[in-house]
Length: 565
Ligand code: GLC
Image (cartoon, rainbow, N blue to C red; front, side, top):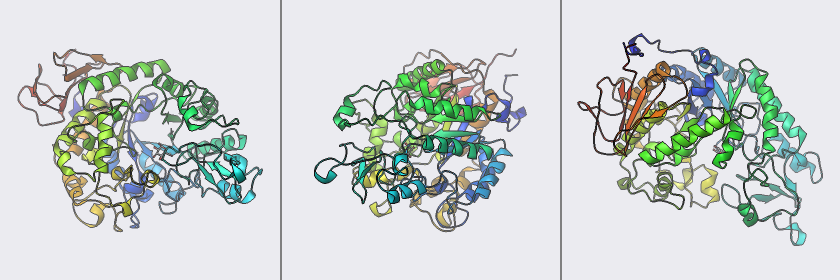
């Protein structure tokens, strides 16, 4: 018998039995406002997620990561948090949140929540106090307020750009300016202020005490800043090395914050986990993933890679080395709430390359800008490649992150009118950047009915008619559907999971990658279009319909050990 007899493998192995659970978890990202709407107001909510708890269990994921569900004016899809220890009343109550944790825990699924520490919402009581209290007040010290320059201080303290486009400083009524690295409604917090630090510890304890298993840390590389005056220009900032001393990003002293958080995490049993969203130079990622810091960090390299064997192989090799350098495990991400869905990126013809050689993602943005010219997008090709890439990813050592809807093979929605757009990146770039709404469109649960089963009150972003063809209901019973392949792959992944190692095996083809895990689990991906002859016939799963003895182009196959011992 091969080491995996799936018929006899329990459907769910409790991830708690694996120690520590997060190192090789399959984590499913939920964007709560677009997942399922129980109260029919057009916005997804926590009871909606609870109603899909069985779906999540059947999918076979180990953990759910919830994007922000906190009270928010939705200036940045919830990443503008008005109360870090509350639930947006449109999404439910704290009691609903507790029910959700119970519903997931009772099904063996861990819960990770998003913490947004770089900035709050301008609706946060602290920011409202800061505005009211005026210059020189303790309330203003929780944020980054400065006097302007030029006559009457009418010019910003510095010419800095916000990450979402436009200036990073905004003037308030009494003439002072505040820093917002993202939207105007997202004032940066002052991490030199002990009160800010203490408050986030309270927040981490608040959610940990409610049973949350881990945290995803938003913009983890930007909290601490050196704002010694005179402030440098944007050009000077851009020219400075990112060596831990840069005034704005990836400063060494941010790890003092995380060392304190680590003590909080480790005071729980089991320790709470954290994963950093840190856009930093590769060599500095291990600082965030270090066990004395956040413990794990996102690796976004697959988001930026083409569907290309060389690129995938170097991304994997480099990131396994980085993970080893930190003592953590690697993470893998093909899609999330900030990027064009991978089925669409891979379905776009004639990718253009930018200066850094990042074709697929960039081309996705170009395509969005064109209004989604469907002639350029081959949904079938994109879907096929996406499934092949997913099976490639799910076999890798480390944690895999899956973004809601990708299990349905869902594509990016380009056909959103300007009036319907929500993302501040669209508005702040004056439409030059079409924004991230297209991957945040509410999920199609049914092929027909109001909002494709998302909820009775319509959908807060428009769902196109073609969503019907991707509905969950239509895929459930079809063994060849994307959903069925995800389910089977996740089930197999649990049964096959092994030591965090990988060995590349030669294939004689530059466009075919083959790797083996220590227990003999093998993954072969054909990135090319020519079929690849297989040397064995005991496949466990294919991403595309197999042909006799052959791995079709743009597909992946898994094998278990063929050692009978
Ligand atoms: C992170 C989030 C993104 C958000 C930004 C500002 O990059 O993933 O969605 O807009 O932080 O909070």
